[in-house]
Length: 173
Image 1 (cartoon, helix red, strand yellow):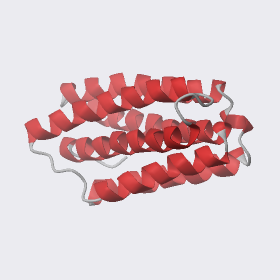
Image 2: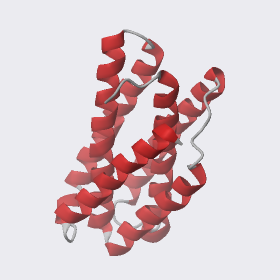
Image 3: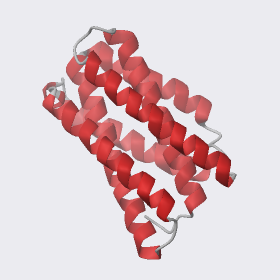
């Protein structure tokens, strides 16, 4: 990752957490409250909501503007969650596994940069805490059958590519 300032990191990470809440909302809208993996999805959605709220508060305190793409992330996240859930419960879990794998990589790169620079321990602490949750989400999705989704390698690859593109866009817009 190129040198990124803390404000950009916060903006991108808040956008990602917001997008995750919308993905889970889309999954639950299709799978229902009692559908396969609904309890796991609700738990993950609650953690993502808490992450987003903490980033929202940090943005307000530090005067960080949100990405201008937030309305797009709302629709795109919900559509991704609903679309994968329509394929089936394993595809919804494949979506979660792919997104969380990419976020783990993203957060790890940010932590490496923050630690190398020795600045912003508050942000580094948040990212480290949230990365642990994201890893748990990925592992739970894999345990719930993500890899049994139709065309898993292709589905996962496309979703991961979309995540990387979303991160790059949120850094700039």
